[in-house]
Amino acid sequence: MNQLVPEEDQAERMAFILALRQRGIRDVAVLRALELVPRPLFVDPALRVHAYDDVALPIACGQTMSQPSLVAAMTEALAVTAAHHVLEVGTGSGYQAAVLSHVAGSVVTVDRYRTLVSEAQARFEVLGLRNITAYVGDGFQGLPARAPFDRILLTASVESVPKALVDQLKFGGILVAPVGPPDQVQSLSRFVKEQSGLARTDLSPVRFVPLIPGAAATL
Ligand code: SAH
Image 1 (cartoon, rainbow, N blue to C red):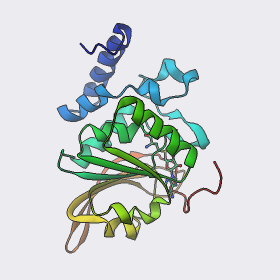
Image 2: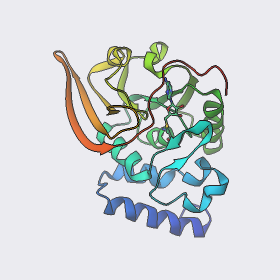
Image 3: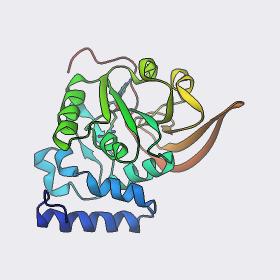
Image 4: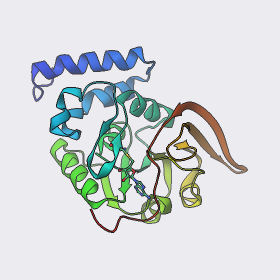
């Protein structure tokens, strides 16, 4: 048993992992990653009682963190290994990046809000997650200085995959994104970059906040 985690929390985490299994998450490495990341650290203290519920929760700057079963499903769809360099667009609380850091070799994550990026970075430090770097920037542009990527995950919706992100994905690489109109039902889709273009598979209906162009001027 992990000595750093109180026993009460252990029981909650076991129930949490069981619920994810019941929701169809099968990948053992992904389940282990979700078990290792304490979601309470990433949520508003006022919402602590819901930290291990399978619900989306509000975070700072008017944004939302996804429900854990969706975080798990996206991580599973990305088919990440320890050999992979991964880009996440939409750092938010940092929870999804922390989950990715346990399955990937390295993770870079970008958000348009400085506040979210610095809070997420502080959480990565507390957890000793040294293979994640968080940047302030416009995710529509990707992170050319850290490209190319084996995997790219968008945690905000787009109407179509931004060209810069396609350019920064390796051939044979996978990109997962919610695709569709803002504030309506979108499709969580998985794209494989082939010589002939992107091969798309639609996975499930979802609803994400939209990716907004430009780094925020304040916050
Ligand atoms: N993955 C996060 C939740 C992301 S919510 C988590 O695990 O908590 C979507 C995030 O996308 C928000 O934090 C929002 O600020 C960010 N975002 C929106 N437009 C963006 C852009 N153009 N570039 C980078 N981040 C953006």
